[in-house]
Image (tube, helix red, strand yellow):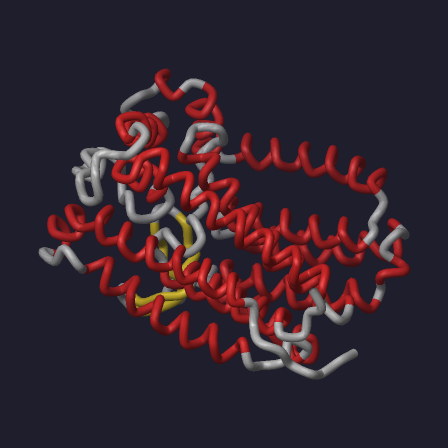
Length: 366
């Protein structure tokens, strides 16, 4: 394997910064009214997002200069630390409860979400496992079961919080990685049916999840309850039209759409910047996906390829689910939009992941 570095993927850097800049602007625009009402400071959320963006960018450039196979050496340690954090977050007094989920560890407004970092830890470890056991991945017992067992252990611990959205993204990412590694489609069909049955069980076991499904099928059945959020989201997107109402001119952020700076920030973006603005963001994500696939194909070794596939799959799945929810094509899952939604853990994780991807690009052969 060649150890000669080249320049990082410039298009990937520019695309990431464009998404980050749009995100910072939209976090301020979407949150100013709510921040002024709750904290008497229109910049409350924007300042914190800017802080995490600054830290994340510094970390991204730092990690961009760390050889990506370093993460192969530390993959097990990172995974164990993340499992320990998932245990700690469940302990009352240690884990913080927000919106019904015990998913955060921290003090006051500054906290981390261990389940977010478990996603990247699982990518590190699974990339190492698949690169070392690619020949056995076609075997159900020797290859597929051991890799998926660890994934579903992490998923089970995340569901104890509970956080179905983050768990779904992690499982989806790992399934893509295992499929790319060469696992048999027939094995996935059987496991898919089993997984579907388990997913239905998870939905039926919690009334609020069932409410999300019914509100997705017919939000007008309970317009002031379970269907409220998606209806308000569509009310935001609809009036946006082609060019939008103008930056800062959203109506739905005036206490109609709950906490619009987080999961539903794309709805506010579509309302203010219209179809053109929303399409531009989708195109930027498509460019990000394109560069990630190129990096994965050009990586000098299997570990780098699987690592790039995992990172870009994580981002793509999260974008797909978030925009699907906001536009009413999928049930509400509580997934943030990468680089745009307010949230320190999510933003930091995405920038760290891009840093790793940029390092792989320095060795990739296009």
